[in-house]
Image 1 (cartoon, helix red, strand yellow):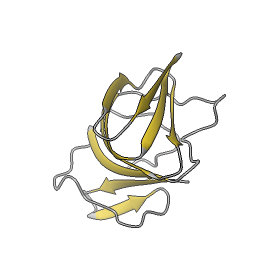
Image 2 (tube, one colour):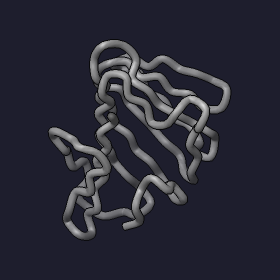
Image 3 (tube, rainbow, N blue to C red):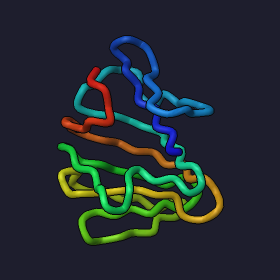
Image 4 (tube, rainbow, N blue to C red):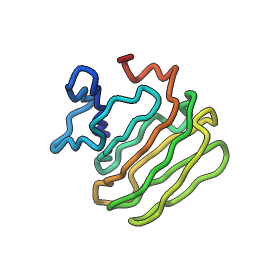
Length: 122
């Protein structure tokens, strides 16, 4: 399971898309075009099946805090470790998964996300 906490600051509430032990608010002003996320990827978790990549508008930026994260963007795959970062155009098909036997903690900034059916509109 991937714990993704998305903050709806206009309402002053944290909207949790999956259970998260310690939600962290990373921004205190609402900006509908930018999301700051702290994501926990449990061991063996993935954002979507290998044969079903995700696309949406916007650009994603990530920084791995702990663990090892696999990232596929189009036909390219990356193995990120603590201290590594990545950025990509989110209109490119992509997926994420935890590698190894420990959870992954990562910080994400998503700019201009729209049309992602997994995320309720705010």
